[in-house]
Length: 156
Image 1 (cartoon, rainbow, N blue to C red):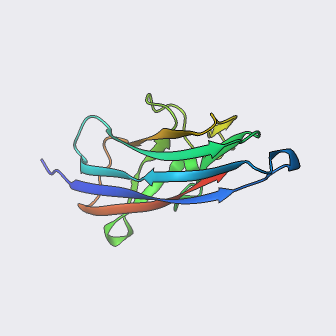
Image 2: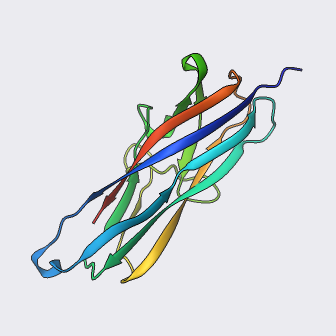
Image 3: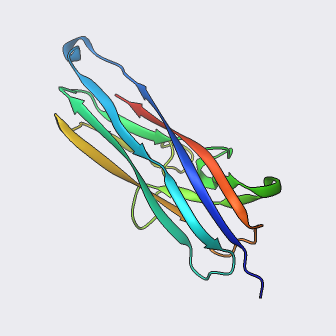
């Protein structure tokens, strides 16, 4: 039996877009931090998917308009089919989810994906939103390191 061990990491890059209305001129939101996802010891012969978790944190003060957080598709053409790239350009499918059950693919709310929000943020409270990751079982890929970069867009 041949087992292939692989590890993967998802780098998260944060961006923010602000649209202030005159009544909300004193409002502000900011990223507090982003924790990327790290998958370790994926085995192609494992019978179960490999799960991990990261997070994005933010804080809003006097924010009167809804916020959203979107995740890009990374190097894939769609958030529904994210993939990490490894040795010799081999790809390892994975995805990012809004929920612990890993049913709601986190994207930008289009093409079958979901987004965080829109919601009115709690005033002056640090909020940490989990990002749930999963590599499906049974992918025959070469051993090595795999990676992808996902852009986090915070709109307020």
